[in-house]
Length: 457
Ligand code: SF4
Image 1 (cartoon, rainbow, N blue to C red):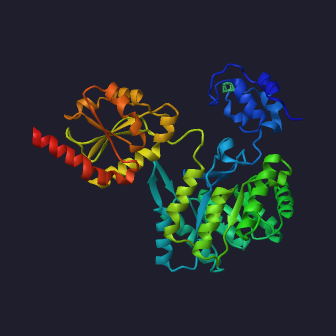
Image 2: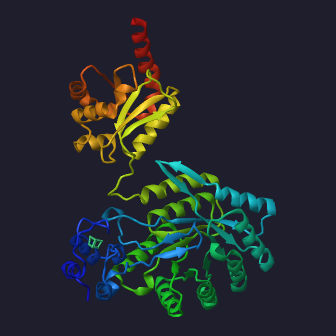
């Protein structure tokens, strides 16, 4: 029987040390009772507590580790259906296919392109994190050689996509701890592929036509001693994908059937066109694939998919934020403009990139507004004129510039008066509403103002 929050609380140390990231043991107990966290987060849980909690403390979707080197990935351990209820933990893994029948040059070039697919966005690096090696040569020597070649060129985990268990097993051996998982093409080959997974301690992806068959197959394979399983319910229309992956997530969270308690996978068919690939991958990122396997890809797909993934897998309770303080764009001097904005990452990065595009180096005074964007922070009382004025003065910007002018976002023109009261002797210039209008503002307003001041002097 499931334990209540109070029953769980009585089993915890009750020291409120906060190491689990919850303010009190009671708060942690309530989350445990709701199956939204794992008991592992409390380093002081006694053996008695672990035994008593038992299955109650196990997350409903198993966490599966993929690859064994320092680029290893994790999937699963999700605890909610809707991101805003808590957060999604393990971003969808995008496994980009390379085919073993490519020429040596084309193969190397494809692996290098995947390796280099890495971008900085909003203060984070977003990157492709897995390669899927497709067996299209039907030749063990070729497939194994190509697996070895990937290991020479990349340290990303590698998905083994072959219909032949013997060939798959050889490739796994060649890749050693870089082998990510084996993909089992059908029920008939499940035992043979399960043996590879078990022997090499790597996950297996199971595939079946109907959800019920998939759950039964997963339980059968789990009973063979394979713990790390992922579920591919098959490809279909967008609505079928949405339905299947939502059902798997829902039934896992409800613990309707143990066989559904694993991350799900979308394997896009070989003949999908590039737009279908992008569409299916987008759906998988949003609803609820742990892994999307791409048989083919084009570089234009990377950035939007990685951006989507970054947005979906950001903790909604912890906005991405930068630290408050003064930042430089280019090499500003004592005559350079001073922009003021909030510490929401996206706001900061959009403003800094538009300031850079304006060609006029500048100082940015970033005010700690708990990671909120400008209008949200203003309406929450975190970006009022008095508060912002005080933060600007305390930032020390007055020691860096000769002029006494700051530019505030156009959306909060209303704080200008309060800022002037809080910052006697300073001019508060109302900047554009959108960061994209900063270059025009610099040209039409800032440079004009500076020139007229210089002319008077
Ligand atoms: S880490 Fe354990 S002891 Fe510390 S507050 Fe959390 S539940 Fe309580």
